[in-house]
Length: 88
Image 1 (cartoon, rainbow, N blue to C red):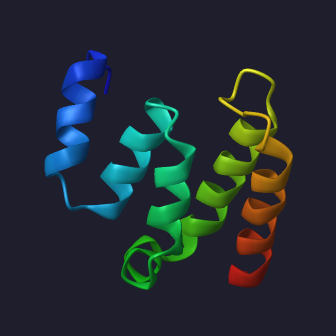
Image 2 (image 1 turned 180 degrees about the horizontal axis):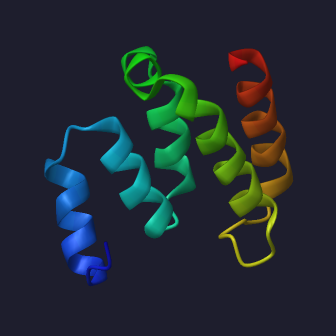
């Protein structure tokens, strides 16, 4: 769904559904939060088979020049890749 950024931020604060939180975090380019959500064992169980595609989304966003990467982006991308590989 397309919501103004302020509403997405508010929804991110109140929703407890891992899938919804992840989609909001992706939309807000909050890669740190995406990684946190995907690293939570409870969320992993809730997301099931879809977790692999979500890790791929995070890696694609982090590796894209406009993906919000910073000077530490390379290290973070390695971390994301390692998390993804160990979760397969």
